[in-house]
Image 1 (spheres, one colour):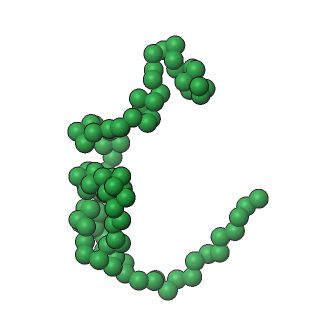
Image 2 (image 1 turned 90 degrees about the vertical axis):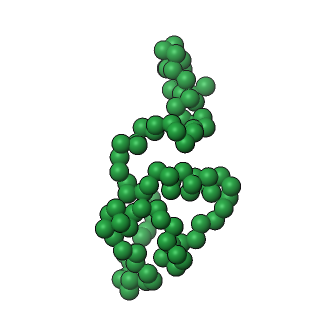
Length: 93
């Protein structure tokens, strides 16, 4: 039993209910009030594809998957390398 389980059990809070249970499409999620630019229907379909282990191709190289990001955020898909040199990343010990 985790520390959270021990601390919340006397209060009748089931941590697993909040963290690991299956959720249905109709359930209102805690972050539904936030606008990430992605359509909820698209996110649900993408989640179902992930569960089915269906690979979704990169839309920079294939037709649009209509996720909603481009029109909602007034962005355009960048195709190919930018030519910019990325900063070298090192492991901090």
